[in-house]
Length: 331
Image 1 (cartoon, rainbow, N blue to C red):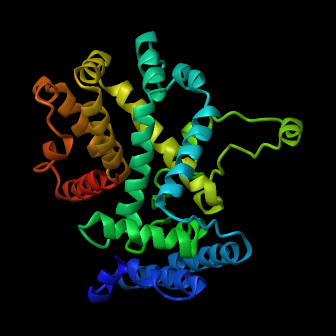
Image 2: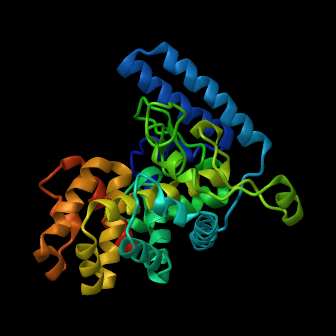
C-alpha cells in the first residue's frame, strides 16, 4: 500500500518518516519546526527552547525502549488497556462534587452509565485511533493508506517515535501522537488547563502500596515536556473525559438523555465528532454542539454534527470531514 506514496509529493511530517535512521528522522522533524518558527516569527528564544527540548527528546529516544507494535490491531488492544487503566484510577465521585461541576444525581447517573457502556468505550478507542491518523498520519483521502503509515511507524519506529513527533506548523509547544499542546496542560497558576484539572482526581497510592503491588505512578506530570511514553495516551483520554463532563455541565440533562434514548448508536457517533472537534477547536465545538442538540429536529431526524457545522467554520469543517472519513474506514 505504501508503494502508492512513492508517486506522491510528500510533505512534512510524513516525508521524514521514511528517512532510514529513526534518530535522524526525529531530528529532521524538530528542525523543520524550528525552520517554520524562524521563517514566520523570527523568534530566536523560542527556537532555542525547542532545540533544548529536542535534545531531551532525542536522548530519551536513544536510551529507552522503543515500544514496537506489530500492527494497528495490536495497537488498538494497547489503547483499550490504557483506557481501562485511566478510568480505573480516576475518582469520578470527587469530580462530581467539585466546585466546577456539583452535578446533581441525574447527571451523575448519566455519566456513570455512559462510561460503563462497552459500545461507547469501543468508540472512545476508535476516536483515539482516528485522531492519531488525522494528526500525524494523514497523507491521503484513502484511510487504508493512512493506516499503513501508522502500521509502518508502529512496527519500524515504535511508540516512542510517535510520542516524539512535533507539531511542525505551530509556534506553541505541541508534540506526540495527538499533538497535545501547552494550551491544555501547563504550570501557569493563572491559567486553567483541562488535563491538569482531571489529573487532580487521579488516585495516588503510597510508596509502600506501589512497592507491594508493583504499581506505577498514575498521576501525570504537570508539564508536557516531562511526559513519558504512556502519558501521552492517558492525557488524551483525560482530555476527552473532560470534554464529556463539560457537555453534561452545559447541556440540559433531559436533552442528553433524550438524544441517548432516541438512538444510542447515533448519539455515540455524534459524541465522537464532538470529541474530535473539541480536540481541534474546543470552545467553538462546545458552543456548536450545544446548538445542535438543542434543536430537537437534529435528534429526531438523526442529523450529523459533522454536516451541521459545514457552513459554520471552514477550519473545523475540514478537520471533522477528515475525521469522519477516517472513522468510517477505520474498521
